[in-house]
Image 1: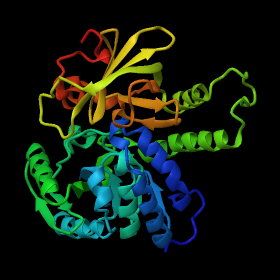
Image 2 (image 1 turned 180 degrees about the vertical axis):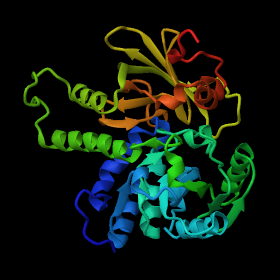
Image 3 (image 1 turned 90 degrees about the vertical axis):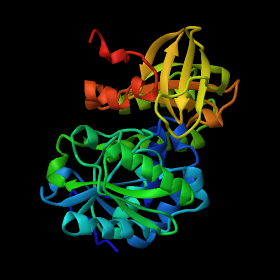
Image 4 (image 1 turned 120 degrees about the vertical axis):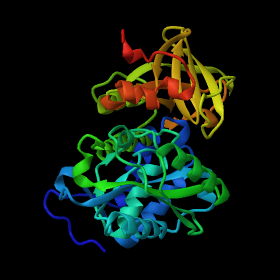
Length: 387
């Protein structure tokens, strides 16, 4: 069990899990965050036994500290049916230690979104290690090598993978082939794997990681949880202090989310169409293509969203307005929760937000790895301008 926190020390404890879960859903780009509530309950139980996890900046660690990214690949539905035991992280750490010259000294998230915002916390708790406040995506991407770690030239391998049945494999190959091999293993091993990858030293994370990612997830999660708690206490017709009675609850939440994330609201209104998309990605991605159309209440524009597990494009009356690597998020006005196409149907009311990705994703290499073209859409990203 962890001892008392030192002055200024940051920790993730049991009481932080609801905010962590809500923030993880927000940064999941809607579709990929569905059905992860089980992971929150599991993490609460785990932290109740291990104690809190220390959250540190990479710069706080000795530059020689060995560390590795932790994250799952595969289906969250499969994970809910065949949940982790917590011991998977010990297998990963053991397998990687033999290849990196000694035991790990810290854990970092592969991506601080969806279930992968929670699993590195669990890994750090089980191993008794600090969690580095960073990640390699700033969102969810479908492939494990679509990371800023990759953009910075960090080797993905050796890649250690372990199943819920504790089958373990250590791969040493190129990034693209590692993704393909591990994806096949996940399907054969019950639908998901826990991965330990991008083993490196803390001093190498300066330009390779998106720093402060876990803190941002917690901040946004607290906004969402605070709004939910406030809404539960307040009469439906009662205004927030300082606001007029006519301000809708979802508008107040949108303002808070915009302030916390720098997001822009693309529009909102009723879903008038939802169903399979005829567009197929140029690369074999996990998931099914879907499309939905929102009739913006204020402008009358039709906002079309294309999803391939994650939301990847937004077009307003046929003009591209937002795209990966920026995050597209959907707020369900009925439930006041982040949502995705699988939970929605025609007639539902939603708001569409776009959160800017980390600047590294808007460079030429970042757009090649995670922009519209990587998903089979031969479109110029709205931020490319005249390039």
